[in-house]
Amino acid sequence: MANVSDVVRIGIIGCGGIANGKHMPSLKQLKGVEMVAFCDLIPERAEAAKKQFGTPDAKVYTNYKELLEDKTIDVVHVCTPNRSHSFITVDALEAGKHVMCEKPMAINTVEAQKMLDAAKRTGKLLTIGYQTRQSAQAQYLKHEAEIGTFGDIYFARACAVRRRAVPTWGVFLNEYEQGGGPLIDIGTHALDLTLWLMDNYKPKYCLGTSYHAHNNDQEQGNAWGQWDPEKFTVESSAFGFVVMENGATISLDSAWALNTLEVREACCMICGTKAGADMFDGVRINGIRQNKQYIFKPSFEAAGAAFYEGIDDNDPSVKEAYQWINAVRENKNPTVLPEQALCITRILEGIYTSARTGDIVRF
Image (cartoon, rainbow, N blue to C red; front, top):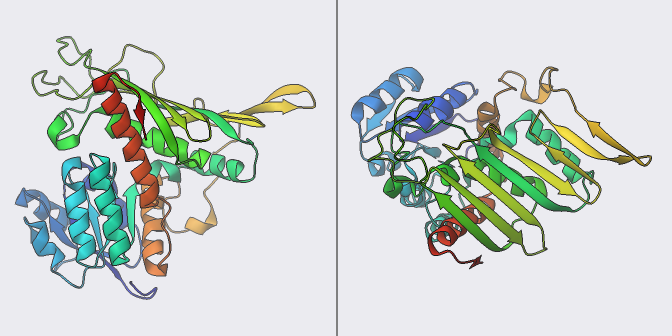
């Protein structure tokens, strides 16, 4: 464990899009944090990451196991394709590092369980990169849920739907490397947010469908340019219906390409016995007061909380990094527990399995 007064030394494994777009810029904003090692299969990417984000004497590797041999590294961020999340994380934990692994936790439940077991066995902290929880809107709704505003939440809708925004870079379209498409990529954020607000991690059964309806489209109108139909091996959309042990129901919609005007990403709707809320037009809370229907829309235009003084309070990725490093410094639980991320992986795998077999999947 790093002492509060110590500099936290971090190694980055995987220097591609998510590392450059989220992890490294966020860590760079934090005081008392140094990125001292970078690993990527493409050495030029690791060198570029070192130059932009690293200390002058930072090391560069193409083999992550060599990075893990550095006993001065406190924390490792795993920013690789989904298939390698599990074994890299387990190796890092076994090497005595705390680990932030990018979402999803793993490509299936067996691999995710190995990660959780390794964290328990080593006593090291493990968290998964679900930064959506750190948005001001999500934090607001979580507080309302905790003080009982909604009562018992018995229905929820998790939404991660794009009209035409298929990622055409990296290995997003590769089922072997990623384990799936929009469901495991963006649907996972919406599901995490929903389960967290419900504080419910006990699924009973699920039913799912998935579609390759637009993989072979020639007229694509895609936000990020034309995709290659031959390489588009994952689903273009997937949908799930989940029933929890307490009877609560969750509907999950995910799509990279769908003929719809209801475009909503990483948001949800929750319905409780006392009130409900959604994130479809800012935050809207609805209920009955004095026998009249009401809608309450809090404003998030005011400045951020002083608690995050010195960092960008409007950036969930920076706030994610902030709370994670604090958890390491103080040896306390991070916001996203590995047990919670494991539940998400179980449900996602269940939806994929149901879509493939046509059967209900019981947990």
